[in-house]
Image (cartoon, rainbow, N blue to C red):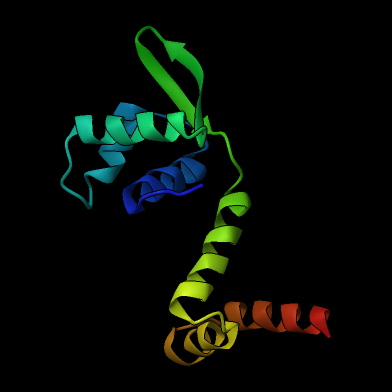
Length: 120
């Protein structure tokens, strides 16, 4: 599934909220991005057409949406494609960036170490 940056932002918000209406999503988004309600509604309609989100209930004319796909099912192929495009297919470049350039907490480092230990 191919999603635009804004579509990804909206579905990430829905994964966080579990379910939401278009007006609620708009209220969250305008806190950091100046967009109209109709723009957000258009993105919701596109996500619904792509079957990334679904309608779960109605309150009069207000529709409640929820994710129709799991976060992992979208993230894994996107990360793989990112590594192919940005890192020339070499995951070491991404790992090096994460370890050298990003501020990782002790919990983050312990988590990475546990993954490495499982792979050995």
